[in-house]
Image (tube, rainbow, N blue to C red; front, side, top):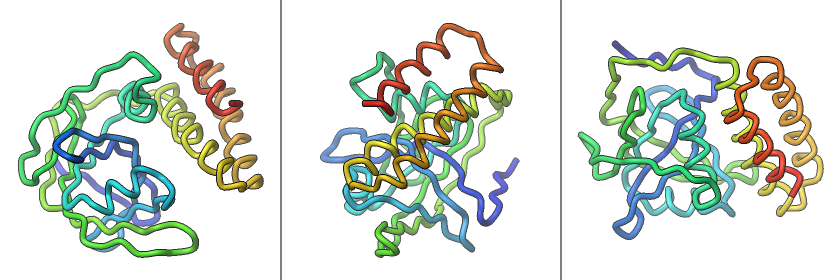
Length: 198
């Protein structure tokens, strides 16, 4: 089984690497560009500083929204992720992810106010069991992505960008309201609403 990545499409992952001997993990979107993967990061974020220092990173591919929640809001939600040593690089990988792209950080350069990070895949592992697709899961991941962008844009004073992602957040909130009445999902939506409005 192979992972097929289409050019121009942003794929979501949970990036994991070591920082000062400890596991660091956080959501990271990336695109395929030839034989490389590219991520666009705000230079003000810890993720950028970490990836700029790291030689290796694992892109943990998963459809489980609760892994994204635990990675995006460490210490603010009760969830513990488990990591194991990667197969080909000196970095941890998330136990339970459906697939892994183990990559070498080959370059970082500025581009229109963000930093573009080039990643060269060294190893790709695809697990046997895939999580079934759910609109609720996909929408929850979208909400988590937007909830991480709004505070950064607000801090930068980017009112237009912050307003844009807040609007998207609210649209996706409506989708979850239609496709899931699960209490766990409702609790996460309420938490993320507080993050965006805060």
